[in-house]
Length: 385
Image (tube, rainbow, N blue to C red; front, side, top):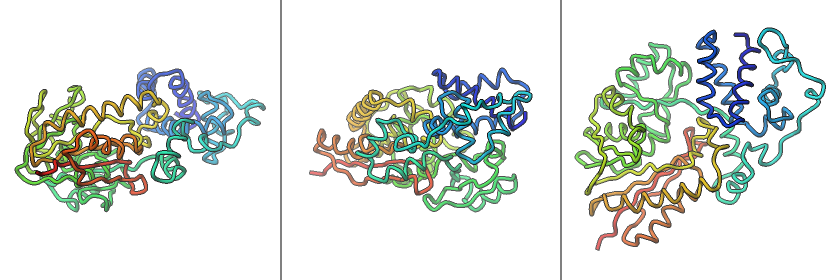
């Protein structure tokens, strides 16, 4: 495919997303219908679509409309690319620009400039404990790719050498002693022997740092209550050197975990109905995902005030329920991939009001400026006596 044809495909997919189709489904359906497209074509089109999703409002403003065609025009203008080279009308390219399109477009301001819905822009300004513009700007760009070194099989230096031999260039990241940031060759990771043999796992550096912050010691009984895909489960096993129990309210989310555990050479116990008493219970609760909107930008536009309110209710319910699974001298750990206080500090404050026999031992935010996703972690313990 020509570069112009790739942009035309992206415009088509953007229209499907605007009509309500999920981004991943729209991309998958386009690929199935377009067998002529090679892997490089699909990767480039995906990048175009996700770049526009991250800048959904500003591309519409700059491009003068909300169609896929207008947003492509807006993106080209944002990146100082020549629209005339894309809107050629030749082959499978987009039709040439009309004079009205050439004159359309405005300079985005405030919420448009920050690429946030109006209600989230207001919430960020009132609730976020960091600079709104800086955070919003970070969310408009692609996230880095990080790997976690499996310390049960290798060390970080050796993993780096093994990856380099297969064309994956990495550098250590200071936020976690197990983290490697991929500088080149990210699309080769999944096919590398280092990955296939469990030397490394794909995991955001802040997600790794959350596990680093937990008070884990060998021999502990540990439960990952909201395990999902199991990234933190596997990281906890690597720290403990022993098994971890994994549970999720929707077990299908853990469907890949047995294969990941086998690759890593570790044991994970999948359980449906956890009972007491654990030394540490981690609740990586369902949340807005605002800390990872660089990776999943669609979530920024699908979230509503009603959905956020429902999520905070679920988070509080999980905390109250899981407290009973923690032993007398155990730790209840709470984590989100959220930037919002209502899902983070406010949840801990509300839990302590409802449960006066507990105290907060640690609260920490990992900000986007540190390189990884925006994570929050807190640890809670019972008050002795």
